[in-house]
Image (cartoon, rainbow, N blue to C red; front, top):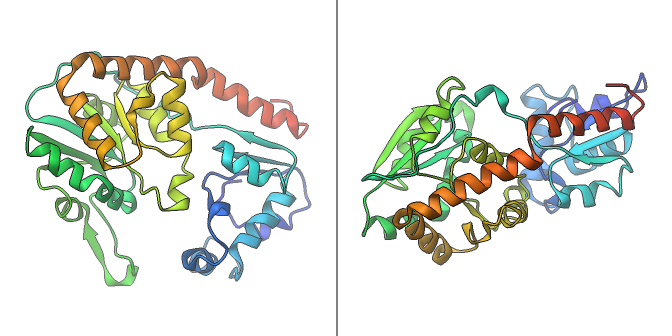
Length: 301
């Protein structure tokens, strides 16, 4: 079962084995966090839960205690969950369905094309590096390529929707927008020069994000700059690319300029990243991880 399933109902399920796929780091949030307190009610309104949940963290903990196995995505998550369930596994996404092309040419033109992709609700994370982009753009021509949905609901959904491009252009003006589509994703991304994954390091939920997006970019051979979250730092260091996880704006400006100026650095980042993913997070390796999850609950794959 996924983390957006009805955790109230499943926590009381006694009909068989339950494997809980718990992706996000909700347990890292302070119990008094306003969004954390309201999340249970919001999920009930969206129809995810049969009954409203007044204490969302407690409901998550009950679900973990009930599960015969919990699948999570980071070491930090596992440490928290192991106090609730003794059978915890780390498994990342496979993403094979959108991989149609791989980057092989690391020459860059002008403007230098920087790509961001993801859910439109996360587009505001680009504000983290807005001033760094403007700083570097004062010396080099930069085009920001955004791959996401064309619009999104406003903070209060019944107030309508907002165009994603309008949101991005308030952060950086030279933007090219592409609608997210699995048939075109890898072609669009690999035609860019650099991928970025900025994260606000003051937001515990986002700091606890797994390495899925970095692994996805690496699968298509992209050089990637990331914020210095624990998962991204571990992966970048393991691939020999530790200098490309950025802790502050100075790091972002320095890394962006290095990538713009140096084709060899871009090639090394793309090739080393892809080699790392092929060695440790290839399709066969990830399927074997899921086999181990099933075996741990007595199910023969």
